[in-house]
Amino acid sequence: MIETIESEFAELTANRTNTTSSAAHCRFCKAPLTQTFVDLGMSPLCESYLTADQLNRMEPFYPLHVKVCEQCYLVQLEEYVSPEHIFTEYAYFSSYSDSWLKHASNYVEMISERFQLGAHNLAVELASNDGYLLQYFVEKGIPVLGVEPAVNVAKVAEKKGVPTLVKFFGCQTAQEMVANGQAADLVIGNNVLAQVPDLNDFVGGIRIVLKPGGVATLEFPHLERLMEENQYDTIYHEHFSYFSLITVEKIFKGHGLVLFDVDEIPTHGGSLRIYLRHAEDNSKPVTPTVVSLREREVAFGLDRMETYANFGEQVKESKRALLELLIRLRRNGKRIAGYGAPGKGNTLLNYCGIRTDFVEFTVDRNPYKHGRFLPGTHIPIYVPEWIREYRPDYILILPWNLKAEIVAQLAYAREWGAKFIVPIPTARILE
Ligand SMILES: [Zn+2]
Image (cartoon, rainbow, N blue to C red):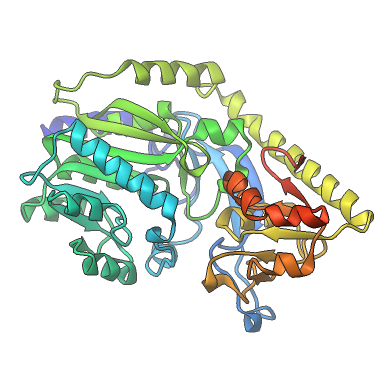
């Protein structure tokens, strides 16, 4: 069976000559990458916040030049930075966000009900972080195993009673797991698929570790939403791939897995949760939701190169509109502060060239960031109370996906007439 699928995959990639060169070939189908999706210039790693003594040193910048494959339409970044460098000491702990925990616990309820999971099953999460999700299976008495490459984060998970394998996931890890009796009834991957440099090795690993009747679910930001809503700031070096349903379906099919259901979920500005099974498992038919979303993507043009080619111009126009607004406000003597210091803010500010000449400082609730500076733009990050002290005329909301929550938190700023700006999809002042 394995041989059949491997030869099917070999067929898919057979007409490509160069499969070994690291640069300029599609991460999935190995076709040469010649078409630009969007070029955001040079940018520092978006999570590398600086301390005061780092401001006078050299700072590494890497290209943020996104390409699209003409064969399979996979939108992708070349691997400019090694994943070991980015992820092994990744500072992000999932449990820090209440809304994300709620999302995880709802998912566990839904999935264990739908597929009748119990004490005889095993749920495996890839990039399990600090056990933020698997802890809810543990509560229900469903056995779990996390796979997580960041040592410090995995230690926190172990303390919560979530057994964790400290490894990068791929075919080799999957084979070891199966040999150890750790084949999975449920494989979960939330916001990890985009961050995998060797996509075929990762997807191949899912097929290996998944039991014959098992289900895998993966969540990732939806490319259609990124394009429709101009979310170019969600592009950063840690995200190697950007998926439509059409393309992700092709990728999994190439590895003997069928996408049989899909949910559209609101996380990260609009994501997909896809459900996969082995091609041989006929017990789970493909749902009408898959068919209609596929049709919607075709209507949007995700199966035509010109749709992708137009995106770059849309992004440039969004930059011009934001700069135009900020220039007008500054010329009129208005004072502008930022709110938030998210990774996406750093892509936006570096691409648009917005430094303290426009935004004097930003604030964030994460204590790690206080007293530090944004990478590249060197905008200082203060505690949220600074807004009340400084009384800016305008507040630029960088995590625009949380704008309703932030406007509510900062309701007091209306006392002195402050207004809010959102930069995406196109710059506007909230009335
Ligand atoms: Zn391709």
